[in-house]
Length: 394
Image: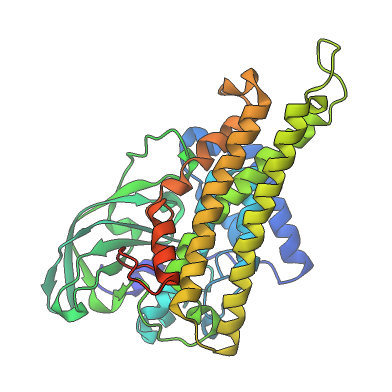
């Protein structure tokens, strides 16, 4: 890859539907298609480009493109509620859709680079396989990159890929993300997992690939564009969009539990499951837990977003609360899905059972480094004015 334009040359731009009823219909249409195809995506272990195109039509891949480049930036809560709805149908597809938010990172690129990336339109699908960070050879004008990077969720449907580079003196030791054309790297299909199969989080491999310096940025680095969404804490947002997938999975699981519990009699002619004390109590507690975690999650999101819109200071405590709300959502959502699984009884152990989709996928987000249990301790430390003990927190 010799120029930044090489990335865009392989893209087939898809325009979002006009904002308003047409875009709302495009979103509902995408959900309907997902209900029909989610098993297909799970079997093949990735979300294909033709469905990504439907998400572009619904506006999810311009939701974090700066307005300066034709984007229609969406308030974080509004974007995440759409991801939540997708995840209630299929959490793995929701996970892929959540990366429509990751264009906020591109704001740290030189403005001229951003102009070139968005030259054909604001609807860009990005996927990053950033770890482990690889040491690249610094050469005139850029870097020679070699290595294997794991966990590139959505890479088979992406327009642009990111790979992680270890920082050097020129970045004050901060790691870099290098943007590359999917045609210039190899996708190593090694995503052999029990949950989140359809995310297609394969590895990316490169061998002495030249990446111009202007196509690299510090993830979460200072933005070159000043808009409300670029003021919102980007690393906290990255944790939030993953956590909200679990909220969606929990909603899908509880909706199923409601449906089953509403049946008035069992197949044996006895009381229905929903008429049993344990079922009623378990369902009520799970509903309360989910709604409580969700309320905190969106309350702090809206509070910080309002600060970003006004241009007011967003403190470390604000950002820690965003991280805390995200971790709480991921862990409570997982527990709610387990509660629904428990209510379903023996039948839920079969692979074909509707709850298996939510069970397998909902276990994954809380395993992510940004949402693991140690982030509770880190958030508590920040709230107490102490050091969090985790790099890049909050």
